[in-house]
Image 1: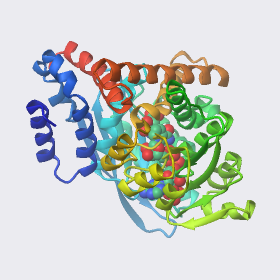
Image 2 (image 1 turned 90 degrees about the vertical axis):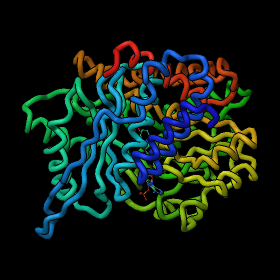
Image 3 (image 1 turned 180 degrees about the vertical axis):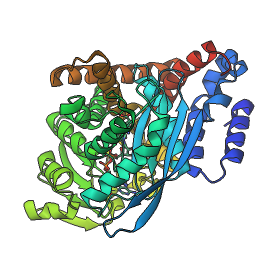
Length: 446
Ligand code: NDP
Ligand code: 2IT
């Protein structure tokens, strides 16, 4: 980074957050993209916009006590980081995973600010979660954990204050338990969480939205570069919410998905994976991906999830977790002819992997643009909750599609305007930043 002002901001972030490598990684990427913007916009520098943007509005850390099935008290740590509310109420998911810590939640919250800005909807950015591992827990344990988590969280959120949703380990089951507890404590039935079940205020297509949106964005990028999903071979890491519906939409758009994974290993099915098998296995039965072979015995299972990047493909859709593609993974993709990577997970590519994509002229759709369809549809759920008029699946899907198109257009044109045509990562960071920056400048030093 050449710009002295940006370097100074990064140094402060590093000094203040020494134990948070993922947060520093996310900030470094955004600041690096902003060099040409800062050169042209001294007014934003004078308003101290960036100094304020890299420091969350507030970081809430709390104890989550609960009683397991054997009667033993368990304690987890809960988080909600309210990062920036310049554009609207804080908005972002809750992650339940044993690897969760403050630095992880801060990187996710920071990214969410720019992502939500790109959605075109009035949404601020935040993120939360807990270091709770839902794997192997009973229904009763999951419910008691969610209720305890909400017993603290409720005082910090509200439908016009902060609206959480799902993320890794948090789906409609967990949202249901948390919504019930919020309602019981506050007596208020409102749109305080998104990703709710359809019978009680949820939006049609929210479950599918991140995976669909990822493919809509990737499709725009491919078409802008003279390509399409038609006839292409695709690999998708993970088999969770985002991965499952990315598999469905990529297939509908004419591709063949030949590999998917979980944290233990990956499956390879040269005949093409039907998303309904994955949905049944993972969403309904909550089993491991290796069980796929019991329904499709011709497929292969390989232990170790990172081996998936060695499977030859045209397009790769990483949909598991942060930093899941390292330099070697990216090199394997490039060597096998992969020409496009679109990120469904948040920050799945290490910086060295991104360098490999650019060095090989691969098309790269960065997470904060490509996976924004989930939160965008959460925004649509908030609209439906406010007006109390639900939309049909077709209406929501059409709005989602339109939003993903406009996000691609914004990334594409910002990249061109600042002299980096085709660099959608820089385009996403710049377009996302400018809207938040204008709002912060207009609202004064708060
Ligand atoms: P789910 O909990 O539904 O699924 C997570 C999937 O990723 C599982 O297949 C899981 O495997 C795998 N996974 C998780 N952690 C790891 C790891 N450390 N190594 C390898 N595999 C791992 O989560 P989602 O699909 O909702 O989220 C996936 C990603 O997409 C996350 O980065 C999330 O932040 C991002 N995202 C989610 C959105 C949403 O609306 N849900 C919106 C935008 C982004 P296993 O079962 O073995 O743990
Ligand atoms: O990372 C994300 O954008 C999400 N987990 C979705 C957040 C939301 O509020 O729907």
